[in-house]
Image (cartoon, rainbow, N blue to C red; front, side, top):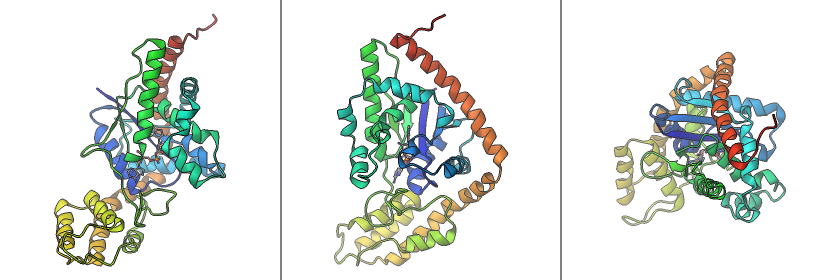
Length: 330
Ligand code: TYM
């Protein structure tokens, strides 16, 4: 049985990027593998959340995991900070990580460009903590979206480096994973780039039908193709991409043919897309809202998940300490 590890930051409600980039794969993988899925609340600290909302954010994501279909009886679901062993592993790995390689990480460079007023050390060492999350359970596979590819490459580099330095074959080379055609990037509704929490261009699992319709109808488009088979502008190719991910295959093909024949009416296409999104999201939303009310159940899932994750983490830490030469005074 392969080991699978992945997580999502608790910085707000989950959007369709999180869902199609990661969560659907978690759900598909849970039955055939030994899975550890966590809520990355330590990672959410880089943006300094209000202490009053930190736990609420974690609970929201936990209820979204469950509402989307993760089963705590088959997969280990836990909160990252309930297993602080990960911070020790992160510290140990950081001793063999070079500041230069962290400074060259794309996500770090992006963050310092967008938020020059908050270049904290946690942002710089973010990939080390992420590698520790993965190596803590010695994962074979890590279901993630396209934007995490470089972090996974770094994780493999850190694992190889550890194995080489200590002359062991301890950490596996964890591979990014998704069902279908490679890692995906779900676009946003604002015509450019990916769907993200901070971009304000997202559709959320918790959105009601009315706001889904209104957000999709407002999605950026252009003035339409003027000749057959005209290459698409980015906003249009993004709407087609969303449709390809969410709608039935023949619906996507129908609108693609319309586009190629210059007969497309973007309004009709967006209406269809909104209905297809609602078909996917509304049953999930109803379950999330139910589960959110059940505090005892959420507590129980997190408590039992933490226990299982701790057992796995403690075993790894004990091996790593021994490999690195720590030894207990008796
Ligand atoms: P985060 O919280 O930004 O996103 C969680 C997951 O959702 C995917 N994702 C997307 N996929 C496709 N299109 C999008 N627009 C989109 N937006 C988000 C991400 O690729 C990710 O899989 N560093 C991670 C959290 C993390 C983690 C880990 C993941 C911490 N430790 C260990 C895996 C293993 C992050 O910030 O993801």
